[in-house]
Image 1 (cartoon, rainbow, N blue to C red):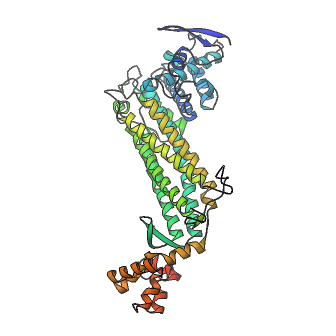
Image 2 (cartoon, rainbow, N blue to C red):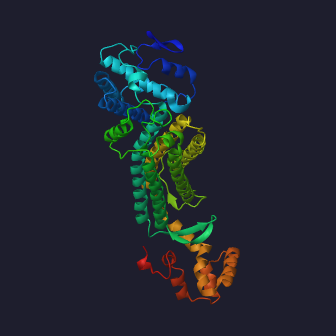
Length: 469
């Protein structure tokens, strides 16, 4: 491969001739061979949009030569359209503040703009990565803005998936509404519940989690672009910070606004902890939901076997015919990762000193990964698990009738102590609570039929079966 020689104030370095990146990117590649992971495509798109907005704003303010500016804009548009992603080669674990990723973008845009103007890559006399592409910018305001924009883009993809999951759960709630099963608390018998009621509760939990994530977007929409190094706006036109956010709003179509304090926006990364915290709360709900489905589908011969999850693949390399709840297990593992990512983000957010938090690269990686993998896992969970759930209604009914929790309704007629003694006798003899209560004359057979009707004990008061909803 042919090479070109580039220079910076630290010396010279060979760069592959086909590469749009330059010497600073090469130094970062050599310095940080850590994970092999690269920036999320949405973050690459975000920085390209920022560079376009900056160039157009600087041209508007007569700070940037129009010929150079138009070439930068064209190059940035190509990148935001999905071209040249392979030239963003810096590891996600890199120098603090995201300077390496930022300079990777500056160099790619500069060299592509040089080509557009008819020059050769590396001829920074035509378009310079710092002087032109980076005009009125710093890594310290650009990189956090890329996290904001990329997070908003991924949230806008995640929220429809959560809405679809909520609807799928509600559909199952309607489908299963007439199915009575034993409730369980402490993993022990409890009062009956309709399977539809359980699924409706799952849908509500997903809805509430989605609302928390939606609420976090208002903070993400506050942009610190224009603050440059520490939020004071040094080396910018007096109108730059207003105009660049206005242009960014036009390019993205999102209700972006300037942060009330650009200095605070440079120092504090709590907005990302807020978003990650909402993601963690969603993860906790998804874990609980997945575990409930795994328990209810356990067996089939030695577990609860109340519901059937879709059989997606053989579950064992040694046990023929075994099928596992693989999609629910997948959802668990993704949720565990999100919780771990949240811990890393929390540590990074508190690690800023004085005028800057330099831990933004690890914040970006973990937050964008959480959004991406959750979006994908929720879709798979809905498509390959929830929509295909079926029930074993006879098993559910049998457990409900045998549940010691059914004694709860008897306590209204026989009292707590007497009912507790009946429960103990039921456990010892295996006879039902209903049978013992009738035998002792505490209630008649006709009363028992009414009292122990499961539809009457899945709602408040003395709701009748015909009114059960």
